[in-house]
Image (tube, rainbow, N blue to C red):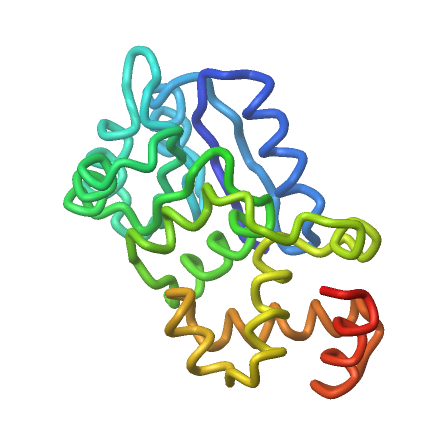
Length: 208
């Protein structure tokens, strides 16, 4: 079980994130806090595996959380949640030793996969990956809606159709090979196919 502590001063957003995470069998949100200080006070007497922190908060902001966690709880993984896809802010977070950087308008699956990647020590830090989180994608259609495909899964299907292998897809999307393999497994389950050929045929059938 991956224990997650979340700091964000926007209550509705924080509740939404908590709900998304709690839907996963191996994720549990141990606390939701309106500012960094309350989160850090909690960590003084309680344990967590991953911290999700907003950057802009009252009393103590996300940079304060990063500094405190890295100094006092070096085993903790810290993921920054941000509204801004600015490289300057991204680099500042990475310089402060953030383990990952997620945009608030990213797909929920991007957040879930990032939590797993960071916890398992296989997350690839790359600003191009961050920028892609904000893209709406060109294939938001009935096919995707019907099969509950995420934006990332749809993107991977297109690359598979082009005959690109997992290792190259991982390089192109700035993801780990293991993450691509997990996405492919989920795609196969959602589309009820058991091979690449069946997947490609299904995608052609639906004009994807």
